Length: 112
Image (tube, rainbow, N blue to C red; front, side, top):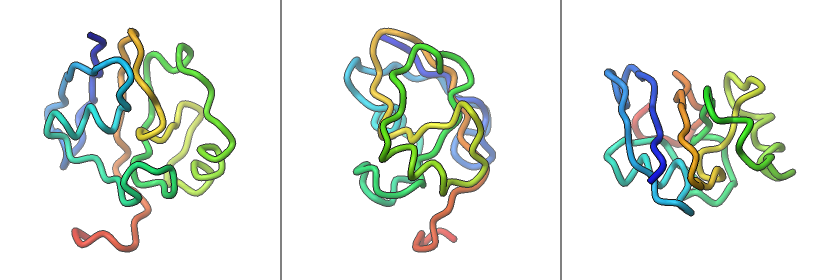
């Protein structure tokens, strides 16, 4: 199974984490299944930006983002060339290294 290495994040995984992903599941699904609480305000329907991540290694092997995902990425905090919405990146057999941004744009989160 492919692995996703999550770089340290001050709240979600302070020491980082390595999780096994099932081929065909999203980065977000794999994180949640392994106890990493990535925000996903729209329930992974590509209707917000709260699950934004940076794919630090393996980005070139991913299918390109579709127009809808690109439109939402334009609204995310801290976007850079390797930004993706974790609910839209479907795992295949390649490993990834992912960084969860420090902030998300989520005006309705009860945790803020």
